[in-house]
Length: 639
Ligand code: BES
Ligand code: ZN
Image (cartoon, rainbow, N blue to C red; front, side):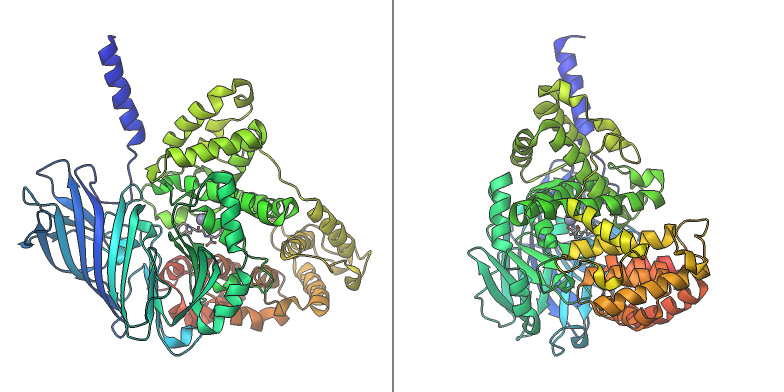
């Protein structure tokens, strides 16, 4: 083969390798690519709709191809096109058939010179990416609240756009709200702007659509540090500011590790409890659940996580949802490095050990195809891909690289990776090629120790994977073991200096103890599935939970992670004194990570299923559409 042909083949094969297909978008960015969006809305709380225009600036490479956008449940009123913003002229459009997962393609034919398209539209009250809260669902109880959640493919339910993480845009927005409410976005927010119902925003750095975010409510702001702050409703703002007071320190620690924070300000918006996630890394403005406000900063790993996304995710972005581990695995690894820098190594070890435990539990129940880091999500809802695999298996892979090559080399590699791909969306193949070139090929002997292909393409975890351990947890286990075997009474468990992480480990260890060694006096035996308990053993486990509860008041715990773990155990072991608290929890919290497993656990027995349905009937109207979709499917909710 001559040199020219060889080069040509190389270029073509590289092109194929890096041009990954996004199964979750109808868009055709290789023919017409949106580069910038100007948004203009009225926020109509009484109708639960956003109404206005989206004006898209487009870069065209195939002059006769139309523009194809993603939409879901949008009402398109009319379309106009223009060349360079001159005189807009009426345009035509067709809205295709709606797919359950993807929504409907909006095809807009473009005149020869056109590079701007203005779409007049409104959202639907059931938009999957919006939650409209009645005053009763807020902390203040007086004003309504609206927030968005665009990741993974919900931006299309409130903006007609190319809803692929491989398409990056800058944006401006002009938002009109009721006069006494404040609007904030994942953009430049001026904390001193007058509250007058008329707000303007701009995001000048190119971001993927899933990072476009808006919230409107009766919000207050508190400064945390020179470039950090917190927004929340008035009754929550002081508690939020105290809890999040280490935020600036975290930004400084992350910069030391991975280079400058590139987004200007880092603020956090604490939302009402129906927010379906723990956190969402909207650039310049992380959205967070109020369930992290434990009173002792013990759940601020969530801030470390969302902040870390400012490098892994927002700066270097997964090109498709099958590459989610590039966002979440890297971020989980970074999160723990930040925790170590700010709170010390023992904290990192505990978090990593809890992560490994979750991973192993999840692997025990997942299909092989769902245990693969570079997951195939064709034909599936990308929200289904967010298991512990991209998070914990991804983080474990990076830990393996760190341990193999040494911290100094691996930190240098990560820093250069973030710089190299800054403001780009990349595939797993692009990461692997860069890893090879920038790290593996430099140290062949060390590289032989990391089975990169197995990590990325195979189910399970390689035999050579690290096994994070925690000396603090080893101590907890000794206490738990002695209590389980009744060597020490409940009052003698040395809990005085336990942190939330130690409590969580204790509870999980004790639960395992109930399953594998039901106390002899109970006369029960583990069920053949290993999970459930025989009736006698359950009685005894419930009695033992009662002992813990009397000593430590776990049913009343105000720490959401501990309460969740305790309530899960209460269902498993039929510990009835916790049932009223379970109901209260399910009726007041909408975070999917908590409520979904509780409903799933309830649904394992016929009586439990009845209780689950009775509670869900009341709670469902207060949950976010994303949580409702998951739990409807789990409980086979009619309709
Ligand atoms: N970006 C995710 C949330 C997400 C992922 C939404 C995939 C939709 C699809 C966010 O950064 C996240 O991981 N949140 C976690 C917090 C955590 C692991 C500390 C959550 O919400 O539980
Ligand atoms: Zn994340």
